[in-house]
Amino acid sequence: LKDEEAHVRLGGTLGLRALGVLAAPHGGALAERLTDDSWFVRRAAAEALGAMGPPAAPHAAALLKAALHDLDDDVRQAAVEALQRQGDAAANFVGDIARLTKDKKRGVRCAAATALGAFGPATTPHLQYLRDLLWDGD
Image (cartoon, rainbow, N blue to C red; front, top):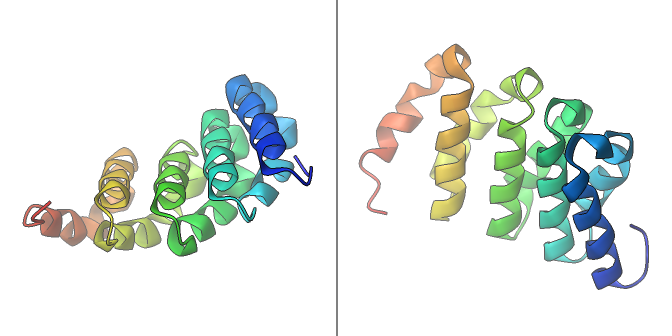
């Protein structure tokens, strides 16, 4: 995962993604890839953490940072989708996820709305964000 070549880092990341929950011991290394120079490595790292589900919960804050600040919309979307799969650990970030329903990219907005639906009652204080999406022209 630390090779100089992006395609090698991507291959390692995709391999861990395929392992799903079995890749949990490598969650920290995957979280480090969320800041990789290559957007496709960052996206694959988010997807791999999402595939791990709740065992990747210690890395929910790193996923949130990617969801909020990555310049690439595919990375932001993958990070939001991964947060949804973290369960209760990511429910602490519902307010931040709700704000992502205002993202400039439709895929990120849709991922945020879907994630909010998965968090159930924790979403209640943020229902206005979902209501606003009803009027979204996209």
